[in-house]
Length: 435
Image (cartoon, rainbow, N blue to C red; front, side):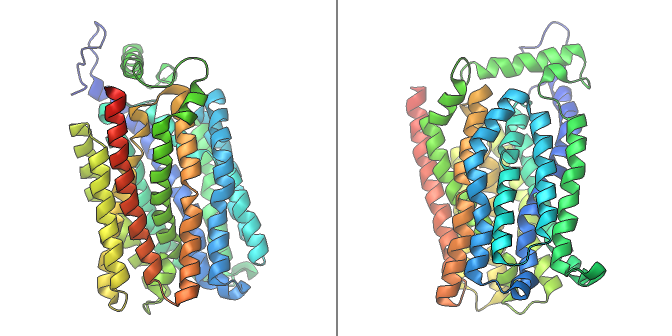
């Protein structure tokens, strides 16, 4: 246990109590920000239920517009995190949220596939740096033994954001209000919270434990020392630390893994509404069924993340979760003629997919710290999120080519299998680095 840690100063400090205070102060807000983030990523999937026909957008054009966001996001992710490492997470994350909220609201006024594509590019520009910035922020506040539990909070809120899908389907019923289509209201309503939360983040976030007014001085000193002691053996200190984080070989492997994860995650998330609609479900039913996989994943994900913390092991935990996702996608791909069984497959895939993502985001901080960690998160999240372009795009191309979703879902299973194999390779590389 972290309480009464041997590294504590003479004045007794309850480490567990310190971390509970950190959790209460930061993580609910961080979680709310992630809910808004994923609503602004998923809104286009629900809007497409009526937007595509109204604007005359084909499946291929929709897949391109939905996925191109990840190109601008990818290009600007490392420089965005470089700025964050200089000005601090509090200011930079707040700036990001204001700009992405305004772009989301602006997307309500697109007139066709060209303007939609432009707004998706701008969304990537605006949002670049948020997710790795938040992961970097959380990693700066929790020791390794508690980092998995802290990251599970983030993934839990990402799963809860799945409730946004059924809620957004009801927003479609606002069609005609103030002369706007229902899908336009989806973008307006999901963009406003990002702007509002930006000002909350500016007021509440702190960049280091030394700035934590909600902790006593002994508690601040204890947390600062514990984190500093852990960082001694990690890559990330001294001149050129940011560049070393970019060039670290293990970071390159994690980029490949995250490419596979985002290929499956974003391909699934941006097409699930239309896949379920093909089963003959009503618009509202589509929303509630689409929410099932992430909500069901919360319990298993939290348990598996805590198990990973207790055993101090990440790689095997990721591989098992990734293979569960692959099995679920395979079941869904082979069962599209039996909707109930296909939905079971999607639920299994959701458990594996969200759990794998939760374990994955703890891995970079196991060998990086400081500016190198900011660089690592930036390049992994940036280049890895290119999978978020290819997943929706490949699904759209396969849908247009075959008239069905079977091959698209099968490609998600293949990607998660590849991810598990690459992580096994990373474990071997880690063993060599430790030798």
